[in-house]
Image (tube, rainbow, N blue to C red):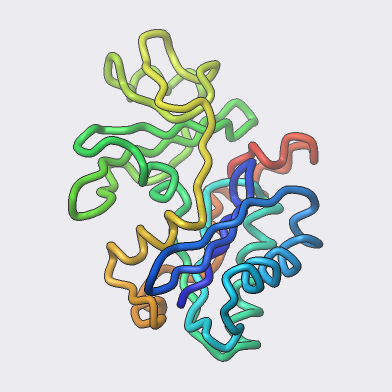
Length: 221
């Protein structure tokens, strides 16, 4: 069984992947205070033992500075406490997991300071293919890299006219972190987790986007 933590977006979630199904729980409030209590609540709801958890998976962004720091720190602590492997995975692939197949999908997120975070993916039967990895660019330069009538997940106010929006908000889900990881060969036994990325926040620039606390959940690091 794998425990997944996704705290990079405006809605935080945790999930337990079992042999039968994936159980997920969304939560809000102060993530630093709520996370461990929410994990305990999910374990109680699924009626499994903490000792049955064989690995921890965490979304590493891009996303909220505070959420990424809390999620990655918690994942490492749980890994040490339970003596189980831990792995990190990009949050953006999880955000496009439920998208239609074989369509190029662009993710656009406000990075503040006059910049945009952009990435592009395509969902296939084999998994999530990365077309353009997450990167920063000046807001005015986004129009030059979005093909006409591009399909976008992200704030319409950030994109040029003519783009189509599958969703106005990037919301990665913990359950989809597990599904993306399984597509990369990770087993529910925890095997393969250590072959993923480090469980550390994905920061696209140093001193990462310290916007106001009010806007933190929408910021990109």
